[in-house]
Image (cartoon, rainbow, N blue to C red; front, side):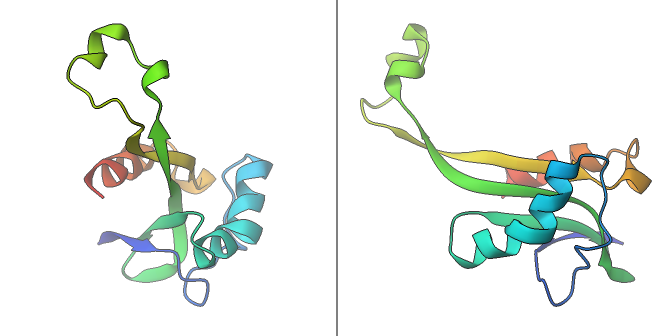
Length: 114
């Protein structure tokens, strides 16, 4: 069964992950846990409960805000006049072995529901 879990460096094998994009691979291997530890972002991984160490894909989320100056004038009437809290998708990657299997869609769905 596939489940989403918050990245746990002691459980999830980041070193074996490869998505074909070196920048994303390096982020997961070197920076995701560090950023999570200091509260800069949170990384969620999709794993199979039978092999929790194998990461099928990951998504990194961080807090953000939308400035009212950046919004369409038609949206301003129903929104407050201060920055609007938001969640930003900072990184999203799918293991090369699982690309084409809707893992990316599942990660996006998880982010929306979180």
